[in-house]
Length: 82
Image 1 (cartoon, one colour):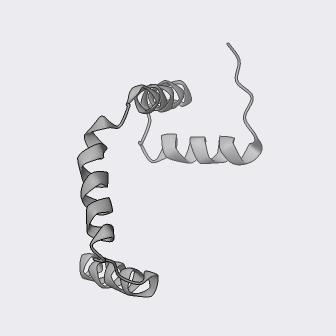
Image 2 (spheres, helix red, strand yellow):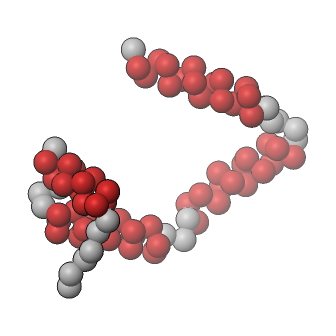
């Protein structure tokens, strides 16, 4: 099988191989396809309890504004950069 990549995709792939992320372009394609296959096979049933919990909290009015959520995320991210 031959795969044709755009120049941008080829540069990205070659850079990942050069930095050691993948052993070769072929290994990268195999890994990325395996990841996608696993993703497609997941029915995400494991997430249902989390969604149910979030929906119940929202129904109780336990919500915050988008701005507050972004500020909270930014604050936590800032602690990771130290």
